Length: 623
Ligand code: ATP
Ligand code: MG
Image (cartoon, rainbow, N blue to C red; front, side, top):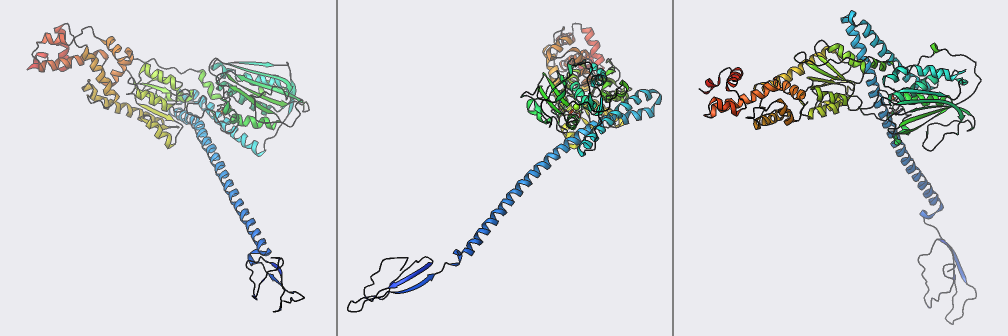
């Protein structure tokens, strides 16, 4: 069987031979035979035949296999790709969503605050035009200007993105332009005791620039520098010519690059502050829209996080680049590099044309709000914690007829003041520097000195979650901005009233509840214990009690007064007298002995105050 087996097979006397498992192919079967005498045939007989491939091995089949494998893997690829795209899309949407949420929270906070002042002051003016028209008008103007600034910024950003913003170069002296701009920041800086130092390489630097864009860039960078630099810091601004390649050190993060050659002439504008700085890992994000390094409610300044995004876009538009270098708690340095040319029409800029859009409402800090010096026995004492001076002022105007008012500019200051003065009620903003309203609640509610003081949170964070959070931290009420002044008044009154009712039981029972169920009981029980331990000591008095409980005289006085409506000395006396009454009822000691044992050296005086307290003389009590 050729080609399966090329050797002859001797079939002996059989006439059959078997082949199994022949592969597909063409074969030639050859036979030789011999007769009975053993004579072999001269010619071989051969039979050719073919074994066909089974259908699944045919080339058509292979083609089909190939096609199906191909299309299958293509489908799989498509599927995976789609899934990846979907995931990316989902992630992108989520990010977009985050940005949007941030935008809404920021914007609503930034809008609500000035709106509170505007609508509130408008109402005040209508109520009493004579008294309020000047001051209210000013506040309204300032706050609406701020709103306008915000809206303009947002619009500018979207205009920039859609390419609708035009550049209008003029050729002029940028040094004097910058000086004019900086001048408009002096008041703002002076309020924070910040010095602005300006240095220009040459007295005059004539070049093409777009005043409007440069103004935006300067305003944003300088107001950031002022905003993020604590009191008493310095801001350095300098301008010089250089090339693009200069000053590129590895710490710089470049947000943009420009197509011009590294050796072309560039204007370098450097703005350096000695402020809070930006952590390294946050540097790449600060140019993003709505990004704020600290977006917690204790953040340093107000703002929406648009400033730098806008600045970056503008610098790009002018074919420049902006870079930043920063060290936490040391300071931040922004460098803007702009290509220099001298082709535009010449024009001189006069000071009047330059009006930097300094966030005006912040200058309100100039006028300090007079906190009243608390006097005893008059109107309740309310402490206002609010970082925005205009809102604080507005609150003062709403409440000054019924309360003695104190103002703290941030959470920490508020906490310190609360401990020191022990006010009757606290009105607090949520978003404040240092400590936010939630922390303030938590700290004050956990301290014996202040745990009894009702706190009302007044805030632009109007969402339900924030409200819950506020209540969870122990706030007694939560009022969203802009608020209705009468609602605020009613709330305050109610809170003070409720607290009075709650505390009435202490007036009758100054010893406090033995089964301690709140910090107030605990406080009174502790006081009682200290007094009991020194019962017979006639020299025991306010001073010793203060030492024992670890509070100052005023703190103790205000806390006891708030709880029991008694002065500290009356409080001590009434506890002593309560003890005397017990002794009268349960022992046989005579009145002088009892007087001595509760720390009265003069039995006659004892009888006198006892009668005052309980309406009956001690001798009667015994019967
Ligand atoms: P806006 O400018 O819109 O009122 P903003 O100042 O918070 O709000 P950007 O100007 O975009 O927003 O700045 C983004 C963030 O970068 C700021 O929130 C701040 O955390 C940080 N930042 C900007 N400049 C400085 C600086 N000079 N020092 C420290 N941090 C800064
Ligand atoms: Mg800013």
